[in-house]
Length: 299
Image 1: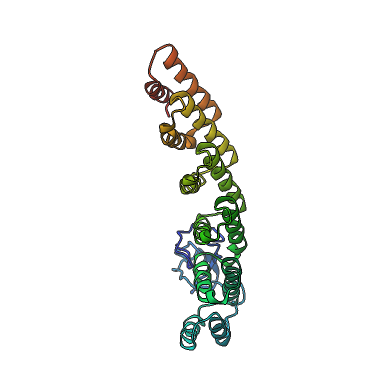
Image 2: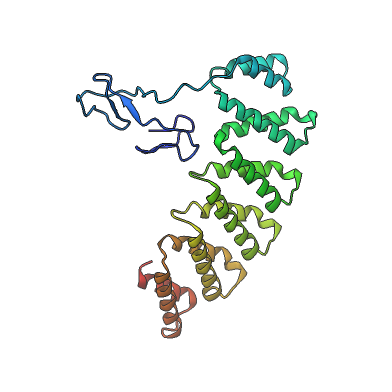
């Protein structure tokens, strides 16, 4: 089964799509006996007949938007009469009141934030607002504003020429399943560590730092404790195995990322002990000692 809004694969029993927040109907009505049956049942457990995809009505139908209101909005945003009419005709049967309100709020926010309400940029603001309203759900809009403000302030030093980059990052993060305020804080922590500690706040590593943070927070069960463990593994590999040689930064990061899903404090201690034994007692070179230690403890 897939989400009707974004096509994300869904599991039985979920109440909402983890990618876009769309609510999922949980029951069907058996067309033969009229009893409610679970969404995943192919046959009714009460009468034994095949079920259909007819959904139970659990709430009032969402209010649709008046066509004139849609037309007025697009016309006031700078579209000519014909284009506004085409937009209204196409969207009147699709937009709910919540979605239309979101589109208007997104437009106003973009118009103020990106263009300082300069009327020469109404159409550009509309284009970005439509992009945002298609990419994310209305309930994600407050978080989108928070992400954008952080990105502009902490990543791109409020350089207005980089507004588009901040908006693109915002949309990318909100496409990550189950991305919320907690995941945002974790993303920021990874980015800050990688950019400041690993690359010494060098401007040319901004994109690398953002991409690395996006990758890391999508490791299963990755949280603040895992981040601290990841940093500890990286520091040990970089310093102990590679002698803090700058050219081995990426190798050290890759190994830490490979090991972190299987690592516990106990296993890490065993790895370090086996490595030391291989270096000190067996007189192996660092790379060979690491391979020996990994094989010995099975990671």
